[in-house]
Image 1 (spheres, rainbow, N blue to C red):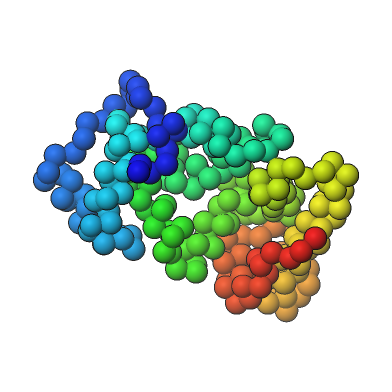
Image 2 (image 1 turned 30 degrees about the horizontal axis):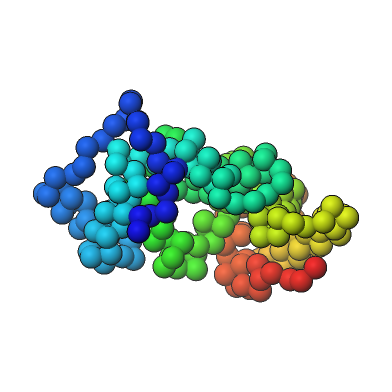
Length: 217
């Protein structure tokens, strides 16, 4: 079984084509990755084999990942699927090159599967930060929550959309108010910019994990 991105990897990466690593290069890479991830040497090697099987050129491109994501998951709005896919891809593409190599892939996977609470919260924050400006607004939070809800419940009836919007607004209010109160003992944004910074988000949710627990609509 491959990494699952077979259709998402380009079979022709003309500009950035990479050959498979030699024994010495692979050994060095594996040792580096075991030091900075939560995978052991055998696990890194296994993931490398899977990644290279699906991506022989050693690169997972954003363009092909978007096609893979939109073909795999059912959502009525194509724009929402593209936005969500780009956000997921961006959390792996740390250098912003538009493609993910194995190093970026395994580091991102390590965070998602075995990362500390703080590391996972940083990943979640980056998902919410749609414009990548280092802060999250309520509108961004609601937008991502709504897309994720539609991904989970693609057959949601049109008449339920208004109720969902109201519910997600209350969820966003709970998260913002809860974090501000925990950190500043205030129920309002003390610096008045209407956003959550990474440090506020991570520390607030770390102190009260219940803020991100799903609530029933």
